Length: 458
Ligand SMILES: Cc1ncc(COP(=O)(O)O)c(C=O)c1O
Image (tube, rainbow, N blue to C red; front, side, top):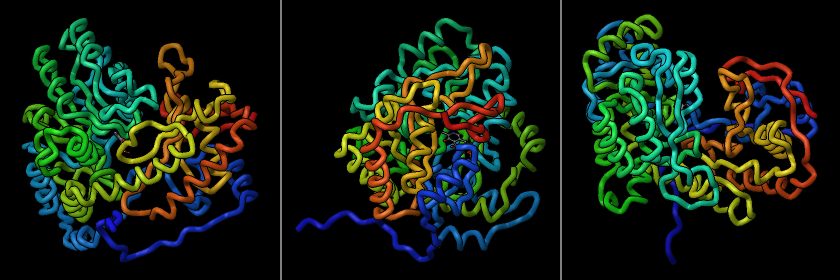
């Protein structure tokens, strides 16, 4: 008999989680103004809100924390982190930041100015927020296949070269501080970018004299997909693929809360000393001194170790097979989601699931609330609420697909938990025809409103 697959780790420490009743959850979500961010974590049984900062650290990471050097300047933890970035990604210049959006804030303070254009593959919301905050525009050049969940394309994070070239051709290079390549592309479903596409984007960038930024939160998951889906790389190690990927980037920002497998942390990496030097000024102003930038020494040690672990094939295989395990169950039940599964979660196509709810009533948010009430599972809306209003017209921006994202934390839940998630969704799917109305907004912020929005049931 062929031995089944099992994770390449065992569990040394556990944390209790609480079940609740449907009545309790109905009460709690109402009190939370139908915003799942407002729930207390103890009101959630399985928390798939995000895979960011929610992973389980390894014994080696915890022991590295004990060796953290908390010196204000010149800490050995900083050098360990810096050398790890050099070894894995190849960059000479580097600044730690406390998380991904902080890295964006510092780097964009140097590079982005009013009226600029930043083409890329579906920019993440904080990235877009930091661009629009500076009165510049993010231009989505993702391939069309990414906007049809049922098309089985291996690299739905790819940039459409024609769309990109038309931006590069029709605008002066001085208005395009960089092309933003998000690996993997969170907003389109944790979808990878192929090595071929990375190279093609690089060639176009070279032709038009434009730089490239990798938004690298899940770069290791991207490398896994290159290994298993791009035949040329099947015999390469993940670390070799990672090194090759980053040859084509001038800058990298990273939220280390994802593939750094830590609870907090981030960084910026540069191939250019001049930009690095300019960024140090903003880092000191916003984050902290150059050699800690918002992180404690112990946290830098944990990230350095985490980056080494996340770039191992066995770890990545365990992680992504769990996402596939959940995806297979949903597929067999006829639930539409972004296919093939991405790296860090399942993105349910809420338009297909709740086809009777009007788009003005926030379809994916409605589904997220229904799943919470059904089974105590917290996902997140990647839909109209997250898309914010158009900065000029102030009208809602309706995305092509409204997603309910079920992000799976690293090394945290078992496949039994995935079975509960699948059953919870199937129960909502069975009664989907009775769900005909959604929610209306009572209060919202001007930018990144989904975090704090208050809603009322229609
Ligand atoms: C692709 C991507 N970029 C940037 C960020 C921002 O990182 P952080 O949450 O650490 O600020 C995230 C976070 O989810 C992300 O997924």
